[in-house]
Amino acid sequence: MPRGHKSKLRAREKRRQARGETQCLRGAQATAAKEEGSPSSSSLVLETTPQSLPAAGSDERATKQDEESPGTSQASSTTDRSRKTPLDQKAILLVQFLLRKYNMKETITKEDMLKYVIKKHKDHFHEILRRASELMVLAFGIDVKEVDTTRHCYVLISKLQRTRDERMSGEIMPKTGLLMTVLCVIFMKGNCAAEEDIWEVLNVMGIYAGRKHFMYGEPRKLITKDLVQEKYLEYRQVPNSDPPRYEFLWGPRARAETSKMKVLEFLAKIHDTTPNAFPSWYEEALRDEEERARARFAALARTNAIASARIRVSSSYFHP
Image 1 (cartoon, rainbow, N blue to C red):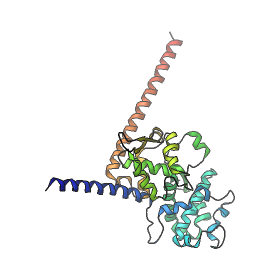
Image 2: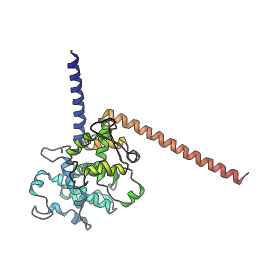
Image 3: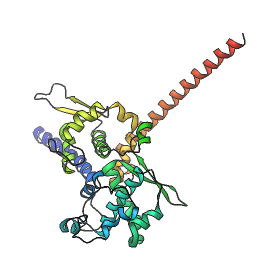
Image 4: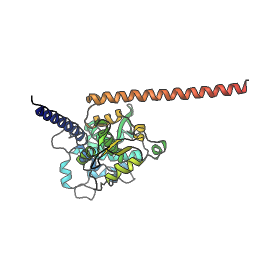
């Protein structure tokens, strides 16, 4: 085979591989709902923003909007309604309910979800909760976990291990979902992603550089300045690039507060699968977990050694 033809084949294979990665990333943000004709998860996220949370008050009032006629001020437009199934609408209301419970530091129970949100759709509870959980991960980077299988109590767990003060405040960071998406792209691109790769995925989510977003503000400022200043991301010029091109890496705070496995779980959750469905990335995430475990063990051993040394010094001081 001529050398030129071989080069073209190799270039074509690389482009196909790149398209496959991008398609996988796009799928993480626009997973289609199971039944035909229902909107994608990314479109439903538009209904789950903090601005849409009901005002403080009774849970009955917080979930009333689904029972009102399309002509009321709280109802969505007829067009939007027609694009969503009843289960989608319930999932959106359940997300709002979960966030309100979280912000009020109230216990989340299956009983309350059935009473105030699910109501006559109780036979579809698990499907509605699954869709709501998917939206929570996508929009806010938060997992919904059942912690008491007897009383059916649930908690919301952030993908980021935030500081104690941040946890005590009970505030949900709307940007967490976006940050997890960017970290996911970086991980899947070999731990260093070109800026154009980041924007290609964010554009699929309806997020564009220079265009103010209702949840994230100005996205370019958020990911190239704010998250960089907070040390979640590193943003640097590609060496010897002319004209200048830029790339993203995980920042030290991202490495401290999350892990490759959590980011892979984020991707798997959106695809409704498990992390080991992505073998190469799963193996890398496992190696990362092992390295982290060794580092924690080493740190614990150093702490114990220092404590033991102090005890010996104190003992020799009092018992010469």
